[in-house]
Length: 293
Image 1 (cartoon, rainbow, N blue to C red):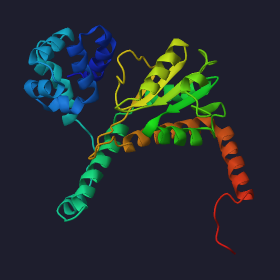
Image 2: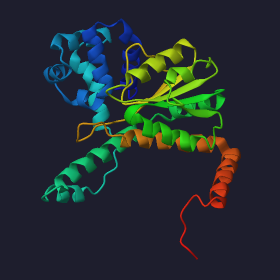
Image 3: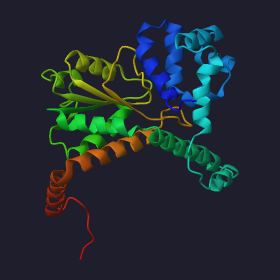
Image 4: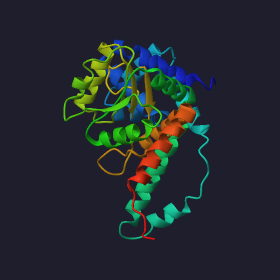
């Protein structure tokens, strides 16, 4: 079977989704967000998880040019079998899980974290990463947006990336709305937005506003389809599965670290010189604690 078939299906789903019915659109989003689960489960199990009828899955299979649901699922199942996850000694997880107290909680959270990082980095396309880095450096102004819990990620990205990108700013500023900061932005500017489910209304609204202004839009999210009417130029997808109620950010952070590495590498000698200026300034102003001589 064509090893690129899974990617081709994902591309077709993204392209055709705006024309789907609600049931087909929900099914397409599930496949894009949960390709591993889709490759494992039967048609009845998948339908139950999505909340649609089995006939919806049959209709989507036909719309994508497949003779049956099994034919549609096959590329996802083969991708699982061909997975090249590194074999590691996970005995310590089993030992933790068998212990009393919070040890089992620690084991489950650790396994989830390892899985998120592994999946997020394994599925990170180097071509997409390179395109995003090039867009960041070509933009007149780069705006970084992350609201609610995503703010911590947005601030960290801005804090490090500014060493290579002096034209970057974190929004919103002065306790304003992020839309205010984009009032004078245009088609030579770029918005880098970070969001995960449940998606911040203000973030989605700002992304849509950026699109209306002709800005480039890059998303770091847990889904290729954060909102059906949103059409980013590029999307970095990370796994956010957790053992508690809230999304885990460790997968998103690992993808962001990789992006930052690309940004600083692309910045070259200028970025390194800027880092030196910051480092020297902090040494001169005793920004960091040092033991007394």
